[in-house]
Length: 70
Image 1 (tube, one colour):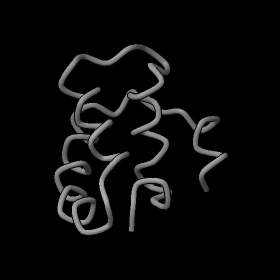
Image 2 (tube, helix red, strand yellow; image 1 turned 30 degrees about the horizontal axis):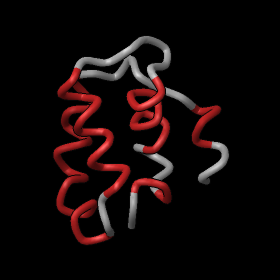
Image 3 (tube, helix red, strand yellow; image 1 turned 60 degrees about the vertical axis):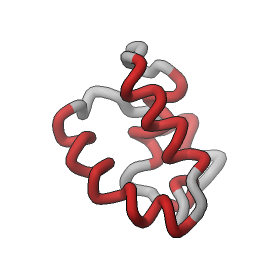
């Protein structure tokens, strides 16, 4: 699995990457960028941490951006 095929996390990752509904800080932006570029093995390793971090920072969400991927 890669981020672009993950319906649970992709809208959140794109929300951070696209600044929706608000811009994210440098850490989340770098993390989302890394997750969106990760290959399957690395994304699988990152995914549990991404889920935990999303629970701490749930306000980022871009369903519109995700439509082109899912």
